Image (cartoon, rainbow, N blue to C red; front, side, top):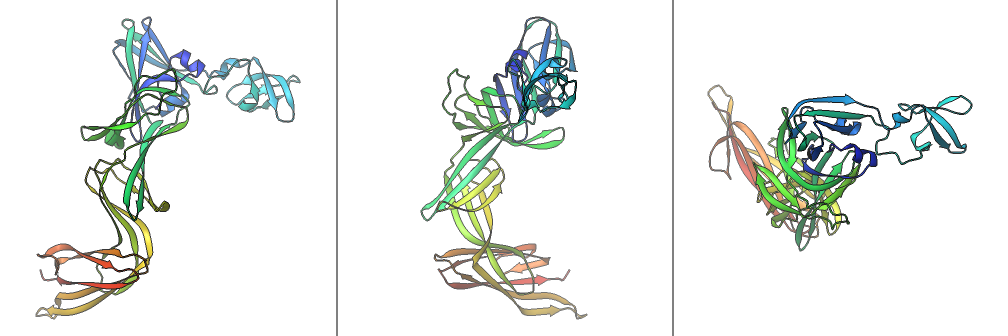
Length: 424
Protein backbone atom coordinates (compact mmCIF):
# COMPACT_ATOMS: atom_id res chain seq x y z
CA UNK A 1 0.00 0.00 0.00
CA UNK A 2 1.07 3.47 -0.57
CA UNK A 3 1.77 5.74 2.32
CA UNK A 4 1.39 9.46 2.52
CA UNK A 5 4.83 11.03 2.47
CA UNK A 6 6.09 14.42 3.52
CA UNK A 7 7.42 16.53 0.67
CA UNK A 8 11.05 16.06 1.71
CA UNK A 9 10.74 12.30 1.50
CA UNK A 10 9.07 12.54 -1.88
CA UNK A 11 11.76 14.74 -3.34
CA UNK A 12 14.60 12.56 -2.11
CA UNK A 13 12.85 9.29 -2.91
CA UNK A 14 13.86 8.01 0.55
CA UNK A 15 12.07 5.12 2.16
CA UNK A 16 9.73 6.27 4.94
CA UNK A 17 8.94 4.56 8.21
CA UNK A 18 5.33 3.47 8.39
CA UNK A 19 2.95 0.89 9.80
CA UNK A 20 1.29 -1.52 7.37
CA UNK A 21 -1.69 -3.77 7.99
CA UNK A 22 -1.61 -5.97 4.93
CA UNK A 23 -4.49 -8.05 3.59
CA UNK A 24 -4.46 -10.27 0.50
CA UNK A 25 -6.07 -7.62 -1.71
CA UNK A 26 -5.62 -4.32 0.14
CA UNK A 27 -3.57 -2.69 2.88
CA UNK A 28 -4.13 -0.11 5.58
CA UNK A 29 -1.29 2.41 5.65
CA UNK A 30 -0.70 4.28 8.91
CA UNK A 31 1.76 7.16 8.98
CA UNK A 32 2.69 9.60 11.75
CA UNK A 33 2.43 13.22 10.57
CA UNK A 34 3.54 16.37 12.41
CA UNK A 35 2.19 19.86 11.81
CA UNK A 36 4.20 22.92 12.85
CA UNK A 37 1.26 25.22 12.13
CA UNK A 38 -2.48 25.01 11.59
CA UNK A 39 -1.95 24.05 7.94
CA UNK A 40 -0.79 20.53 7.09
CA UNK A 41 0.12 19.77 3.47
CA UNK A 42 0.57 16.14 2.46
CA UNK A 43 1.61 15.49 -1.17
CA UNK A 44 0.55 12.18 -2.70
CA UNK A 45 2.16 10.86 -5.91
CA UNK A 46 -0.30 9.91 -8.63
CA UNK A 47 0.53 6.22 -8.22
CA UNK A 48 -0.45 6.46 -4.55
CA UNK A 49 -3.65 8.31 -5.31
CA UNK A 50 -4.70 5.86 -8.00
CA UNK A 51 -4.37 2.91 -5.62
CA UNK A 52 -6.25 4.56 -2.77
CA UNK A 53 -9.67 3.12 -1.92
CA UNK A 54 -12.17 6.02 -1.93
CA UNK A 55 -13.63 7.05 1.39
CA UNK A 56 -10.86 5.54 3.52
CA UNK A 57 -8.72 8.60 4.32
CA UNK A 58 -8.59 9.31 8.05
CA UNK A 59 -6.58 11.68 10.25
CA UNK A 60 -6.52 10.63 13.89
CA UNK A 61 -5.14 12.73 16.75
CA UNK A 62 -5.43 16.09 14.96
CA UNK A 63 -8.68 18.05 14.83
CA UNK A 64 -9.34 19.80 11.53
CA UNK A 65 -12.09 22.01 10.16
CA UNK A 66 -11.48 21.28 6.48
CA UNK A 67 -9.41 19.17 4.10
CA UNK A 68 -8.88 20.04 0.43
CA UNK A 69 -7.48 17.77 -2.26
CA UNK A 70 -5.83 19.43 -5.25
CA UNK A 71 -3.95 18.12 -8.26
CA UNK A 72 -0.50 19.60 -8.78
CA UNK A 73 2.19 19.44 -11.40
CA UNK A 74 4.79 16.70 -11.64
CA UNK A 75 8.45 17.34 -10.86
CA UNK A 76 9.20 17.21 -14.60
CA UNK A 77 6.51 19.80 -15.33
CA UNK A 78 8.52 22.23 -13.23
CA UNK A 79 11.24 22.08 -15.91
CA UNK A 80 8.98 23.18 -18.78
CA UNK A 81 10.59 26.07 -20.67
CA UNK A 82 14.02 25.16 -19.31
CA UNK A 83 16.92 23.46 -21.03
CA UNK A 84 17.90 19.85 -20.43
CA UNK A 85 20.36 17.55 -22.12
CA UNK A 86 19.05 15.00 -24.61
CA UNK A 87 21.36 12.07 -25.36
CA UNK A 88 19.91 9.79 -28.01
CA UNK A 89 21.54 6.58 -29.26
CA UNK A 90 23.67 7.32 -32.35
CA UNK A 91 23.02 11.09 -32.22
CA UNK A 92 25.18 12.22 -29.29
CA UNK A 93 24.23 14.76 -26.64
CA UNK A 94 22.56 18.11 -27.31
CA UNK A 95 20.88 20.82 -25.30
CA UNK A 96 17.11 21.05 -25.85
CA UNK A 97 14.22 22.92 -24.32
CA UNK A 98 11.52 20.92 -22.55
CA UNK A 99 8.32 22.30 -24.07
CA UNK A 100 5.75 19.93 -22.57
CA UNK A 101 6.38 17.39 -19.80
CA UNK A 102 3.19 15.42 -20.38
CA UNK A 103 4.40 13.83 -23.63
CA UNK A 104 8.09 14.89 -23.41
CA UNK A 105 7.89 17.34 -26.31
CA UNK A 106 11.25 19.11 -26.78
CA UNK A 107 12.63 21.83 -29.11
CA UNK A 108 16.22 21.56 -30.35
CA UNK A 109 18.68 24.32 -31.25
CA UNK A 110 17.35 24.39 -34.83
CA UNK A 111 13.87 25.15 -33.53
CA UNK A 112 12.50 21.69 -34.49
CA UNK A 113 10.08 19.87 -32.21
CA UNK A 114 10.03 16.17 -31.45
CA UNK A 115 9.05 13.76 -28.70
CA UNK A 116 11.86 12.38 -26.56
CA UNK A 117 12.12 9.41 -24.23
CA UNK A 118 12.50 10.05 -20.53
CA UNK A 119 15.47 7.69 -20.27
CA UNK A 120 17.33 9.81 -22.88
CA UNK A 121 17.04 13.02 -20.84
CA UNK A 122 19.91 14.15 -18.59
CA UNK A 123 19.40 16.45 -15.60
CA UNK A 124 21.80 18.43 -13.41
CA UNK A 125 20.27 16.83 -10.30
CA UNK A 126 18.79 13.42 -9.54
CA UNK A 127 15.06 13.29 -10.40
CA UNK A 128 12.76 11.88 -7.71
CA UNK A 129 10.89 8.62 -7.99
CA UNK A 130 7.82 9.19 -10.17
CA UNK A 131 9.24 12.35 -11.69
CA UNK A 132 6.69 12.28 -14.53
CA UNK A 133 3.68 11.66 -12.34
CA UNK A 134 1.57 14.54 -11.04
CA UNK A 135 1.08 14.75 -7.29
CA UNK A 136 -2.18 15.13 -5.43
CA UNK A 137 -1.95 17.31 -2.33
CA UNK A 138 -4.10 17.08 0.78
CA UNK A 139 -4.33 20.34 2.71
CA UNK A 140 -5.71 20.04 6.24
CA UNK A 141 -6.84 23.15 8.12
CA UNK A 142 -6.14 22.26 11.75
CA UNK A 143 -7.49 23.76 14.96
CA UNK A 144 -3.96 23.61 16.41
CA UNK A 145 -0.51 22.18 15.53
CA UNK A 146 0.55 18.76 16.72
CA UNK A 147 1.09 15.14 15.75
CA UNK A 148 -1.38 12.63 14.42
CA UNK A 149 -1.79 9.48 12.38
CA UNK A 150 -2.81 9.60 8.74
CA UNK A 151 -4.31 6.33 7.50
CA UNK A 152 -5.96 5.03 4.35
CA UNK A 153 -6.62 1.82 2.45
CA UNK A 154 -4.90 1.01 -0.83
CA UNK A 155 -4.85 -1.93 -3.21
CA UNK A 156 -1.22 -1.31 -4.17
CA UNK A 157 0.30 -3.43 -1.39
CA UNK A 158 -0.86 -7.01 -0.78
CA UNK A 159 0.39 -10.33 0.55
CA UNK A 160 -0.29 -14.01 -0.01
CA UNK A 161 0.90 -17.36 1.27
CA UNK A 162 2.22 -20.17 -0.91
CA UNK A 163 3.07 -23.72 0.03
CA UNK A 164 5.24 -26.63 -0.98
CA UNK A 165 4.30 -30.16 0.06
CA UNK A 166 7.47 -32.26 0.01
CA UNK A 167 6.54 -35.93 -0.06
CA UNK A 168 8.71 -39.06 -0.11
CA UNK A 169 8.57 -42.67 0.99
CA UNK A 170 9.53 -41.51 4.49
CA UNK A 171 6.55 -39.13 4.82
CA UNK A 172 5.75 -35.52 4.00
CA UNK A 173 6.56 -31.97 5.07
CA UNK A 174 4.63 -28.77 4.41
CA UNK A 175 6.62 -25.52 3.96
CA UNK A 176 5.13 -22.06 3.46
CA UNK A 177 6.37 -18.69 2.23
CA UNK A 178 4.77 -15.24 2.52
CA UNK A 179 4.99 -12.93 -0.52
CA UNK A 180 4.57 -9.21 0.32
CA UNK A 181 4.06 -7.12 -2.82
CA UNK A 182 4.62 -3.38 -3.18
CA UNK A 183 3.00 -2.11 -6.36
CA UNK A 184 3.88 1.51 -5.64
CA UNK A 185 6.84 3.57 -6.76
CA UNK A 186 7.70 4.35 -3.15
CA UNK A 187 9.89 2.28 -0.81
CA UNK A 188 8.86 1.61 2.79
CA UNK A 189 10.98 1.22 5.90
CA UNK A 190 8.41 -0.90 7.65
CA UNK A 191 8.29 -0.19 11.37
CA UNK A 192 5.31 -2.36 12.26
CA UNK A 193 3.42 -4.68 9.91
CA UNK A 194 0.37 -6.83 10.38
CA UNK A 195 -0.72 -9.60 8.04
CA UNK A 196 -4.32 -10.74 8.08
CA UNK A 197 -5.98 -13.85 6.65
CA UNK A 198 -9.72 -14.21 6.45
CA UNK A 199 -12.58 -12.31 4.83
CA UNK A 200 -13.17 -8.58 5.20
CA UNK A 201 -16.07 -6.77 3.57
CA UNK A 202 -15.19 -3.43 1.96
CA UNK A 203 -18.19 -1.43 0.67
CA UNK A 204 -20.15 -4.64 0.16
CA UNK A 205 -17.29 -6.36 -1.66
CA UNK A 206 -15.76 -9.33 0.19
CA UNK A 207 -11.98 -9.10 0.38
CA UNK A 208 -9.73 -11.95 1.49
CA UNK A 209 -7.67 -10.76 4.42
CA UNK A 210 -4.66 -12.12 6.23
CA UNK A 211 -3.09 -11.97 9.63
CA UNK A 212 -0.80 -9.61 11.25
CA UNK A 213 2.95 -9.47 11.15
CA UNK A 214 4.89 -7.03 13.30
CA UNK A 215 8.30 -5.56 12.74
CA UNK A 216 10.56 -3.71 15.19
CA UNK A 217 11.77 -0.13 14.54
CA UNK A 218 13.93 0.21 11.45
CA UNK A 219 17.68 0.20 11.96
CA UNK A 220 20.26 2.28 10.12
CA UNK A 221 22.09 -0.95 9.41
CA UNK A 222 20.70 -3.74 7.30
CA UNK A 223 18.58 -5.83 9.71
CA UNK A 224 18.53 -9.58 9.74
CA UNK A 225 15.65 -11.13 7.83
CA UNK A 226 12.48 -10.99 9.93
CA UNK A 227 10.71 -14.14 10.99
CA UNK A 228 6.96 -14.61 11.01
CA UNK A 229 5.26 -16.05 14.05
CA UNK A 230 1.62 -16.85 14.75
CA UNK A 231 -0.21 -14.39 17.01
CA UNK A 232 -3.53 -16.21 17.38
CA UNK A 233 -6.86 -15.02 16.03
CA UNK A 234 -8.59 -11.67 15.95
CA UNK A 235 -12.34 -11.70 15.42
CA UNK A 236 -12.09 -14.86 13.34
CA UNK A 237 -9.07 -13.64 11.34
CA UNK A 238 -5.64 -15.25 11.33
CA UNK A 239 -2.82 -13.17 12.84
CA UNK A 240 0.97 -13.40 12.48
CA UNK A 241 3.88 -11.16 13.56
CA UNK A 242 7.29 -10.31 12.11
CA UNK A 243 10.19 -10.48 14.51
CA UNK A 244 11.99 -7.38 13.21
CA UNK A 245 11.77 -4.43 10.85
CA UNK A 246 12.28 -4.84 7.12
CA UNK A 247 12.49 -2.71 4.00
CA UNK A 248 9.89 -3.07 1.28
CA UNK A 249 11.47 -1.59 -1.88
CA UNK A 250 9.45 0.20 -4.55
CA UNK A 251 7.79 -2.04 -7.15
CA UNK A 252 9.00 -5.18 -5.42
CA UNK A 253 8.01 -8.47 -3.82
CA UNK A 254 9.64 -9.45 -0.54
CA UNK A 255 9.39 -13.16 0.25
CA UNK A 256 9.81 -14.36 3.84
CA UNK A 257 9.77 -17.85 5.35
CA UNK A 258 6.30 -18.38 6.75
CA UNK A 259 4.91 -21.23 8.81
CA UNK A 260 6.04 -24.86 8.77
CA UNK A 261 3.03 -26.63 10.27
CA UNK A 262 3.31 -30.13 11.65
CA UNK A 263 1.30 -32.60 9.57
CA UNK A 264 -0.97 -34.65 11.80
CA UNK A 265 -2.14 -36.78 8.88
CA UNK A 266 -0.94 -37.44 5.34
CA UNK A 267 -2.17 -39.94 2.75
CA UNK A 268 -1.72 -40.56 -0.96
CA UNK A 269 -4.51 -42.24 -2.90
CA UNK A 270 -5.99 -42.63 -6.36
CA UNK A 271 -9.40 -40.98 -6.37
CA UNK A 272 -12.58 -40.83 -8.43
CA UNK A 273 -15.69 -38.70 -7.83
CA UNK A 274 -18.65 -39.29 -10.11
CA UNK A 275 -22.42 -39.44 -10.32
CA UNK A 276 -24.49 -42.62 -10.57
CA UNK A 277 -25.29 -44.04 -14.00
CA UNK A 278 -26.79 -47.29 -15.17
CA UNK A 279 -24.18 -47.43 -17.96
CA UNK A 280 -20.84 -49.18 -17.59
CA UNK A 281 -17.67 -47.10 -17.98
CA UNK A 282 -13.92 -47.14 -17.61
CA UNK A 283 -11.09 -44.66 -17.27
CA UNK A 284 -8.17 -43.55 -15.12
CA UNK A 285 -8.18 -42.41 -11.51
CA UNK A 286 -6.80 -39.06 -10.34
CA UNK A 287 -3.71 -38.49 -8.20
CA UNK A 288 -4.91 -37.34 -4.78
CA UNK A 289 -3.40 -36.34 -1.46
CA UNK A 290 -5.03 -35.84 1.92
CA UNK A 291 -3.45 -34.00 4.83
CA UNK A 292 -4.17 -32.33 8.16
CA UNK A 293 -1.99 -29.55 9.56
CA UNK A 294 -1.49 -28.60 13.18
CA UNK A 295 -1.85 -24.88 12.35
CA UNK A 296 -4.35 -22.76 10.47
CA UNK A 297 -3.47 -22.38 6.80
CA UNK A 298 -4.20 -19.13 4.95
CA UNK A 299 -5.40 -19.62 1.37
CA UNK A 300 -2.76 -19.88 -1.32
CA UNK A 301 -1.26 -21.97 -4.13
CA UNK A 302 0.38 -25.27 -3.23
CA UNK A 303 3.06 -27.14 -5.17
CA UNK A 304 3.50 -30.85 -4.55
CA UNK A 305 6.91 -32.50 -4.93
CA UNK A 306 7.58 -36.22 -4.79
CA UNK A 307 11.21 -37.06 -4.09
CA UNK A 308 12.10 -33.51 -5.06
CA UNK A 309 10.23 -33.56 -8.40
CA UNK A 310 7.16 -31.43 -9.11
CA UNK A 311 4.11 -33.64 -9.58
CA UNK A 312 1.38 -31.02 -9.51
CA UNK A 313 0.03 -27.74 -8.25
CA UNK A 314 -3.30 -26.70 -6.78
CA UNK A 315 -4.83 -24.07 -4.49
CA UNK A 316 -6.00 -24.47 -0.90
CA UNK A 317 -8.58 -22.26 0.81
CA UNK A 318 -8.37 -20.85 4.34
CA UNK A 319 -8.25 -23.94 6.54
CA UNK A 320 -8.66 -24.30 10.31
CA UNK A 321 -6.06 -26.17 12.35
CA UNK A 322 -6.69 -29.91 12.19
CA UNK A 323 -9.14 -29.65 9.28
CA UNK A 324 -8.65 -32.02 6.38
CA UNK A 325 -7.23 -30.68 3.13
CA UNK A 326 -7.85 -32.67 -0.05
CA UNK A 327 -5.63 -32.19 -3.10
CA UNK A 328 -6.33 -33.45 -6.61
CA UNK A 329 -3.46 -33.21 -9.08
CA UNK A 330 -4.90 -34.61 -12.28
CA UNK A 331 -5.11 -37.98 -14.03
CA UNK A 332 -3.07 -40.99 -12.91
CA UNK A 333 -2.57 -43.14 -16.02
CA UNK A 334 -1.04 -45.96 -13.93
CA UNK A 335 -4.28 -46.58 -12.02
CA UNK A 336 -7.30 -47.54 -14.11
CA UNK A 337 -10.84 -48.54 -13.24
CA UNK A 338 -13.60 -50.44 -14.99
CA UNK A 339 -17.16 -49.87 -13.71
CA UNK A 340 -19.96 -52.34 -14.49
CA UNK A 341 -23.63 -52.10 -13.53
CA UNK A 342 -25.94 -55.09 -13.12
CA UNK A 343 -29.68 -54.75 -12.55
CA UNK A 344 -30.68 -57.28 -9.89
CA UNK A 345 -34.41 -56.64 -9.64
CA UNK A 346 -37.23 -54.26 -10.56
CA UNK A 347 -40.65 -53.74 -8.93
CA UNK A 348 -43.70 -52.38 -10.71
CA UNK A 349 -46.99 -50.90 -9.54
CA UNK A 350 -50.48 -51.89 -10.74
CA UNK A 351 -50.12 -49.71 -13.83
CA UNK A 352 -46.91 -51.48 -14.81
CA UNK A 353 -44.65 -48.55 -13.97
CA UNK A 354 -41.25 -49.40 -12.50
CA UNK A 355 -41.20 -48.12 -8.93
CA UNK A 356 -38.09 -49.67 -7.42
CA UNK A 357 -34.87 -50.95 -8.98
CA UNK A 358 -31.92 -52.68 -7.39
CA UNK A 359 -28.47 -52.45 -8.96
CA UNK A 360 -25.09 -53.92 -8.17
CA UNK A 361 -22.20 -51.63 -9.12
CA UNK A 362 -18.76 -53.22 -9.38
CA UNK A 363 -15.45 -51.39 -9.70
CA UNK A 364 -12.37 -53.27 -10.85
CA UNK A 365 -9.15 -51.38 -10.16
CA UNK A 366 -5.86 -52.15 -11.87
CA UNK A 367 -2.52 -50.58 -11.02
CA UNK A 368 0.72 -50.39 -12.96
CA UNK A 369 2.55 -48.88 -9.98
CA UNK A 370 5.61 -50.45 -8.41
CA UNK A 371 4.09 -49.92 -4.97
CA UNK A 372 0.68 -50.69 -3.53
CA UNK A 373 -1.83 -47.83 -3.86
CA UNK A 374 -5.12 -46.99 -2.16
CA UNK A 375 -8.11 -46.39 -4.47
CA UNK A 376 -11.13 -44.41 -3.29
CA UNK A 377 -14.44 -43.83 -5.12
CA UNK A 378 -17.27 -41.46 -4.21
CA UNK A 379 -20.43 -41.91 -6.28
CA UNK A 380 -23.41 -39.60 -5.76
CA UNK A 381 -26.87 -41.14 -6.21
CA UNK A 382 -30.11 -39.16 -6.35
CA UNK A 383 -33.77 -40.16 -6.20
CA UNK A 384 -36.90 -39.88 -4.03
CA UNK A 385 -35.53 -42.67 -1.80
CA UNK A 386 -32.10 -44.23 -2.10
CA UNK A 387 -30.74 -47.16 -0.11
CA UNK A 388 -27.11 -48.26 -0.31
CA UNK A 389 -26.05 -51.49 1.32
CA UNK A 390 -23.14 -49.76 3.07
CA UNK A 391 -25.43 -47.09 4.58
CA UNK A 392 -28.08 -47.73 7.27
CA UNK A 393 -31.09 -45.64 6.15
CA UNK A 394 -32.94 -44.42 3.10
CA UNK A 395 -32.14 -40.90 1.91
CA UNK A 396 -33.12 -38.53 -0.88
CA UNK A 397 -29.46 -38.17 -1.79
CA UNK A 398 -26.77 -40.68 -0.91
CA UNK A 399 -23.09 -41.22 -1.57
CA UNK A 400 -21.57 -44.63 -2.07
CA UNK A 401 -17.95 -44.85 -0.99
CA UNK A 402 -15.53 -47.62 -1.92
CA UNK A 403 -11.97 -48.11 -0.74
CA UNK A 404 -9.58 -50.73 -2.03
CA UNK A 405 -5.86 -51.38 -1.59
CA UNK A 406 -4.43 -52.33 -4.97
CA UNK A 407 -1.24 -54.40 -4.79
CA UNK A 408 1.78 -53.37 -6.87
CA UNK A 409 1.04 -54.27 -10.49
CA UNK A 410 -2.17 -55.96 -9.37
CA UNK A 411 -5.93 -55.86 -9.64
CA UNK A 412 -8.81 -55.81 -7.13
CA UNK A 413 -12.62 -55.47 -7.29
CA UNK A 414 -15.16 -53.85 -4.94
CA UNK A 415 -18.96 -53.65 -5.19
CA UNK A 416 -21.96 -51.98 -3.63
CA UNK A 417 -25.71 -52.48 -4.03
CA UNK A 418 -28.12 -49.58 -4.42
CA UNK A 419 -31.93 -49.52 -4.33
CA UNK A 420 -33.64 -46.56 -6.01
CA UNK A 421 -37.29 -46.30 -4.95
CA UNK A 422 -39.41 -44.05 -7.21
CA UNK A 423 -42.62 -44.62 -5.27
CA UNK A 424 -44.09 -41.44 -3.75
